[in-house]
Length: 193
Image 1: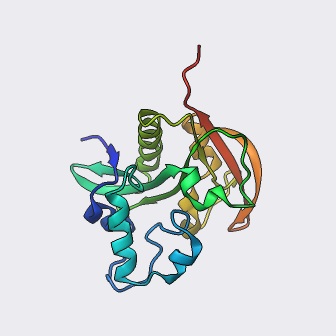
Image 2: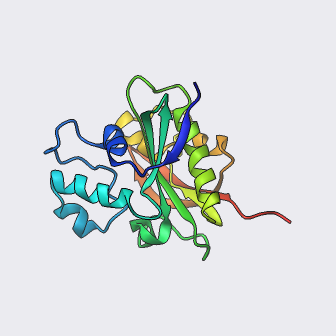
């Protein structure tokens, strides 16, 4: 069966991919860029999960999920940039005044890596953003020039991954992750005349 990508509206599926093994653990849960820093720092354990549950019921939801045979196997955070911390981030530039969507975090469950899940997630995120009327979608991956990226830091994706999905470099950023510069990659979703 092929990989299917759907909006992340089912909390239990989101938790299966980005949640902690122990509910009381204090893991990211992919909230760092999605909510304000003060709220992000204050949320602990089960409160983080409850905040994600709330986000899954909002429109738009906090991202997209990849499924294989109805099992959630991958996650990508996706949201209008204006409602993320990227709207205020001094290291990630604004290219123009378009109301772009940001695609900033990927997670593929162990046992499903190196099987095209990240590519499916990008394609699904692009399709969903286009369906929702986004004029463009941006990502902020590392420009690792083919060098190995620490798996923990690979959550932002690589320039090559974004290029394979049709994105083009739109700007350099002031952000560095795991020793690699991050670049702003963009895909225009507006209809061409």
